[in-house]
Length: 487
Image 1 (spheres, rainbow, N blue to C red):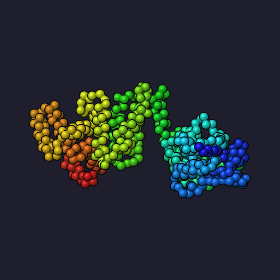
Image 2 (image 1 turned 90 degrees about the vertical axis):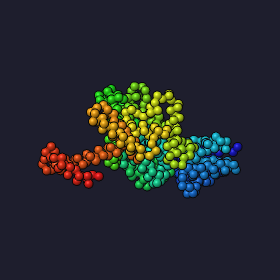
Image 3 (image 1 turned 30 degrees about the vertical axis):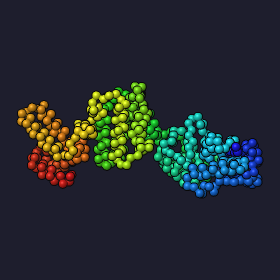
Image 4 (image 1 turned 180 degrees about the vertical axis):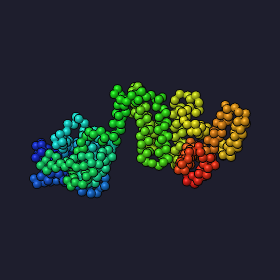
């Protein structure tokens, strides 16, 4: 099996290269380098070393991964004919994707490789910025930076910031977690005689002219609390503090039971914000709903029963399990098939639990009345217990109204309540057949009533009168006028 030697050129000048690596290069008939754009490579060319770079491959591919795979294919092909010595910037195992691909090839038995050292730029970065990595350090690839990976409370070094395009992508990603003017450092050729370190506000990251293959970006850890307000883990710490020994007395005494009413209230306030189509209000109300979730999760953690991590894991697992058409190999053609699969999976899950005491056991008793009735009817309809069209439901409504009037004449409050409930139940059934959500319909009508009544109240007040001093007929005139304004 052919052998290949892979070594690191160091972080900058040829003078920084260890003597052993330099002597190994001297034995090469030809030195393959990922890029010739490196100070040590230029010095080696002047010393007469034959260099073959892969810079031209970059021009033929749009994705970096395709570039690296093409380089490795050519190296493996050449290794069948000759001994290959391949040199990369810095250290072979620091931010070098081609080396990782070669490691995979070695594991597959395609090549045998001797990995030789090289000075990593990281040592010089530690010195330049006085970083102790034990305090928390994260090294990320600028060509594939994801905001979810960024730990803003750690020292952050972003490598492979080759050009303005990559710097722009890095900037936009960081700006999702940090303030636009957050200070960052652009470090090029650190540790060499050509070292350049420039401090800039984040929004100017892609506007500097010193970006090249020796450039890295250093982001200091966040220290100001206001910079952590977007961080979920910090939010979790805030809730834990509120519930902790030195926290808020109100938060400390809350239980799952005591918080129930607030969750319902916040959910309805969110619905109001959605109905108002007010994005800023939606953000605020979503935060209030999330607060309730976090408080319940913190109570679970305080009691040693569960944490918010368990909550997230449970819903993540459920979403993946119930969407096999997205996360697995199940094929669906339309929304109806998605719903059928969802229900089939739910039934299978129920079969794995204890036997239910009621067909409706999974419908929460604490739902608002109209929504509770709607869900009961919807579930009964799934097994065929339903009218096929609304006409007989209208007849049933007339029947229930007649029964209510009989009880009203008899004066039985208890029977009147029961019959009135029957009327509401039939009305919910009608709404369901017409694909109307009764809860939303009633809320919409209530809001319309509020708007119209406020118009009446406003006009009466402008007349210098009290509502009690105005006849119903006068109010009705204003009411009819308001109807045209609030349809």
